[in-house]
Image 1 (spheres, rainbow, N blue to C red):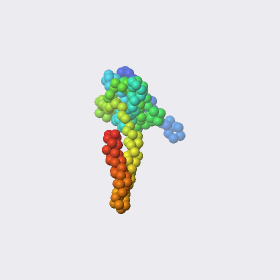
Image 2 (cartoon, rainbow, N blue to C red):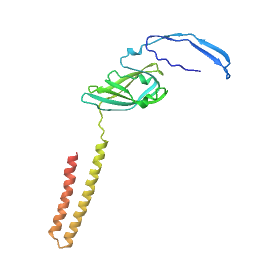
Image 3 (spheres, helix red, strand yellow):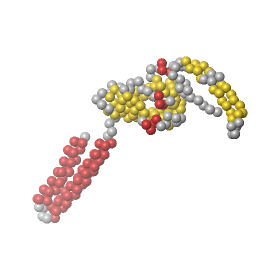
Image 4 (cartoon, rainbow, N blue to C red):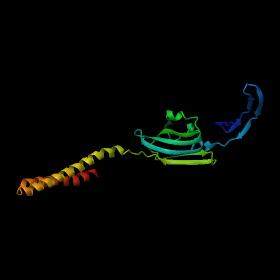
Length: 217
């Protein structure tokens, strides 16, 4: 049994006649069969203005991310998971520029997998929505998501962690010195220099706790 896929680009289409010849292992002719041509009833899916030129048993947006491209445009990258789809024809009408990465194009004959698609969109577009035709349900399905740029705060948070750790250790050290100077104050006849040093250390701790935390917020 053989399965043939045809990409139809017009409303008038005919499956051409097929001739099949059968041979034995020694190339000895056995039999042949001819399948006559078949006229097809074609439905123009492009009448749907949201149609993204894709038919599939299943199509899903696995993940996506939008970033600033220039002053007027954003760039969107998304991963599409497909099953028996002509994903290479995927097209977003609002996009100024679009395409697939080279690794994705190597899967053009795959029946199932995932590919990475990118497009450049005007900043005025806050969300993206498109339809694909489901071969399983014989109807359009809609996929939609936000196209607003997202900021990656991971780097910022990682920069703050060492600074926060330094403040914690410095406060602990200052508190230890404060206690140490207070002990010396009582041991050595209540000399004011030890009391002053202890108060000074305590003042630094309070400064770190109050003013540094406020500036961070």
